[in-house]
Image 1 (cartoon, helix red, strand yellow):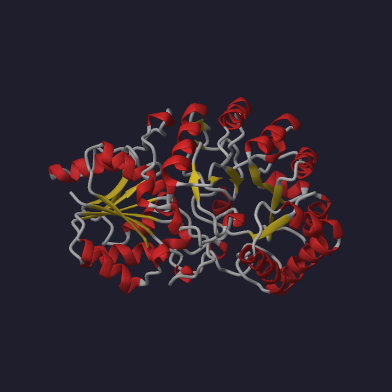
Image 2 (spheres, one colour):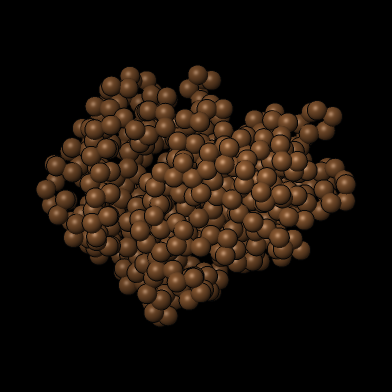
Length: 470
């Protein structure tokens, strides 16, 4: 049985735009390894954005490879590409087409309304997808496979959910052979400093117990983690076998278990790994303390993102963002003191947010010792608490290929011009209201070089001048 795993694309990222967040599809690498361990050795990967393919190109690739099964992974911003790939697979005569990932998990109805998609694998797929293939090979229906949604007599059937994998160390190592690091170095991942570097993404944990209303729930609300020994094994193999120089940690909350986080860092220090570590989104910054930050610096951590979102007490309660802003400010100062580059995440345009509350957030942002920030405008995605609270007109339409590029998201009460003005004000105050900040940016950059400098300058200019996606 030949299996083709497809990573769908944000259509506006293709063909071959080199600065649009194309990263190794870590979920599919785990899935490929699980399939091979389950007795399905013939697995290939088609990463649409990496290859720079349009719909016709995807159709040609599927026809050329002639798979027996196609599995497509997609986020909501990739939903149109998901349906295009499913149509191409069906046109090529593929007997079984399944969808998985964040969008199919949140919107099985959208996927199964498409006759080209036979089944949806919800949440984690390492156990579910091999069982689905076994049922297909027997000619059985999917009624006995937990975690699957499918059609029976034209109606959608949602099988009982599968339990989340409790022991992550029981999973095989990701199938890194499918995603050679050198193929991704010319794309910008969550940690933009990795542009041009030979890096790989890793999960050291899954799940997040926090209940922020705007966030996904693909991995559940219970924190589950690889052991420090398993993490160190993966990092050593990535360096020795694949020549990786840097690691991007893709966790939701790497440091929820402080003792485990410290053990990983001590293992890296003792082993002299020499890897650069980047946390593009994987930390809870206010849980950091001086001892842990010191371990981070000694272990090779170069870049950390700290999620502020909003400084408005009223909004923080509404969106269930319960981080202590005083502790977060102190943690950012500790990181900056150790010359670890800190990026702050900020959100504006929440339903009911006032301009005064946006100014409160901009002022708090200015007070941080962060080197940079990314400002996102609120969007209501299916599968989140925010989606449930929004009127239909303000929800993201999964049928649109514009879900990552809608200027200002659509949740805000203010017109677009006011939000653009607020974005420009926050940017000007943050960078030009603190002259030492620009000096610290270039002092603490993990790496130099004209390509990175040009990219950062262009990004800052676009952030200030244009109404783009952030």
